[in-house]
Image (cartoon, rainbow, N blue to C red):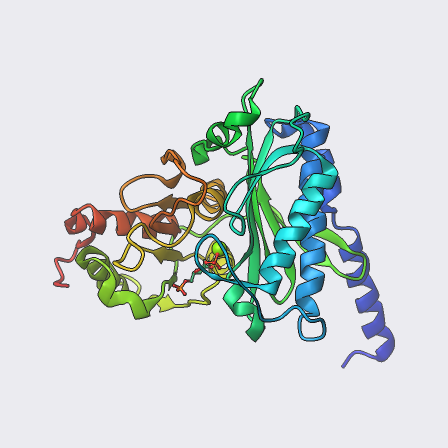
Length: 362
Ligand code: AHM
Ligand code: MG
């Protein structure tokens, strides 16, 4: 049994180790020249998002004490009841990006139209930012984890204020950065600029995001799947067959897949990214185009998962190849470990025979 003295020395050592971790800001500055779109204003834009994330995190952490729980009494453009924290998160992100002035346009889940950052159209900045300010916000009143998702594009030079949305609606493959913040047992900021995926945990004692998860890789063989199983009768026969196939024990290892569904995409995605797994939200009669939104949910997570070695598909096409047409467009989504997304696609495309090595009946 270690003495109190050696215990406190251990604690001091751990705390010294932690404090030597690189901050998000140092990391971005250090790697600036490796970013394809490396400019000081890009670093400042990431800093703006991270500052808003700290404020959102602080509000979430004190949600039972501050008057931020419950609904605002209004519905958003999606017809969903807006939570007070949805509105706070939206406001903080818009405020930080406006103050920073590095982007020219914002698209948010909580606002029907795009938000010009400089309403007089004087800005010549070329970044467009899309975000879901508080994903999974139906979880906020019950202390379950939620998240923020963001996506960044560069507009062509000489863009005109009148067609700023049209030129911002680019294929996901054109993103220059994407990331999320998961407000869970700790707050973690995970992002990519196309050179791998790195995660930074918020140390509330110093108010800094510290590099805690360098170079995240998603395991190829996942052991978890995440979907709203209550909808199974509404899924297509192909998706139902896939889920039945998924639940069989792996004949080689004897292992069975497990189901985990928080109902908060960021949290389900984050767990699957670290441990391996598949998140799916397929089309159904209630959601003929799926539920998740392309510009600020599917695309950023697809960019991240590919950078971590995984895949994202709508069942037929790579998510990052879809040409967006509207700001709030939805898409069916299968995202996660490479082998699981490939298997889902085989079923949806009528090639399930490829997955039946042992000829087992479904
Ligand atoms: P939101 O952006 O309005 O929170 O909606 C997206 C959320 C995802 O976080 C979550 O995976 C999904 O909706 C849950 O939907 P359902 O309740 O249909 O399972
Ligand atoms: Mg969402």
